[in-house]
Length: 61
Image 1 (cartoon, rainbow, N blue to C red):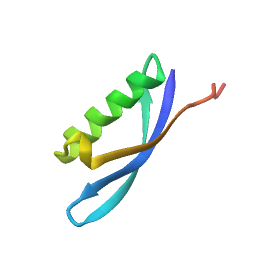
Image 2: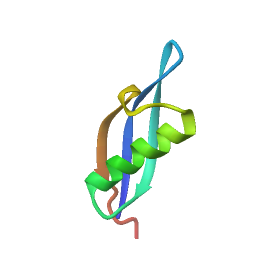
Image 3: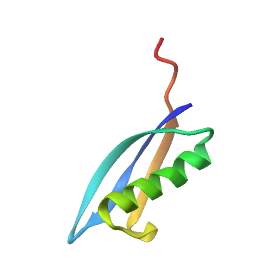
C-alpha cells in the first residue's frame, strides 16, 4: 500500500513543510518510515519532526 505523509520539521530557525509518498504494509509502519527518512535526510531527531497526517493513497488504476 502507498501512503502520503505530510508534516513539518524544524530546519534551523524556520519550519519546513514536507509531503512524502511512502510504500508500507500499514499506517503505523508508514509513520515510522517517514520519521526515519526525514531524520536521515536532514540530520534531525524525531522530536524535531511533526507528522500531521498519514493517508492511504487510493488505487490509481
